[in-house]
Image 1 (cartoon, helix red, strand yellow):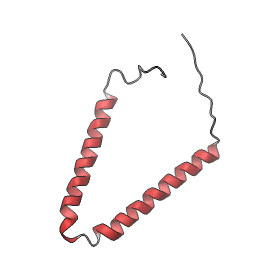
Image 2: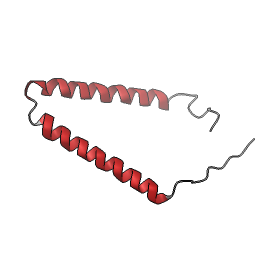
Image 3: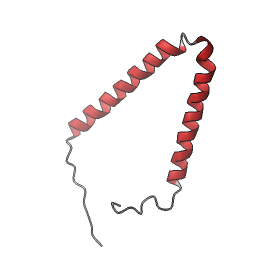
Image 4: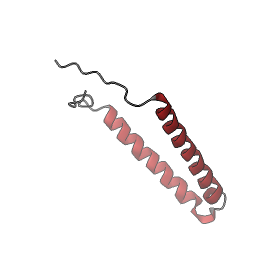
Length: 78
């Protein structure tokens, strides 16, 4: 059996910078969505919430199906 070790080639500061930038973009996106759409949505509020719920349910179902798969860790890199 071939034992392979994964070395860290990315410094921690780069990983931290990437995490902070993704988190800040998520906060800016949520703020913009809430400020520009939810507050002044009018007739489109209920359809927007329905689409968001359906999207979250669909992605959650895909995650559950993928996590229950028997071939999850049988790829050539695991």
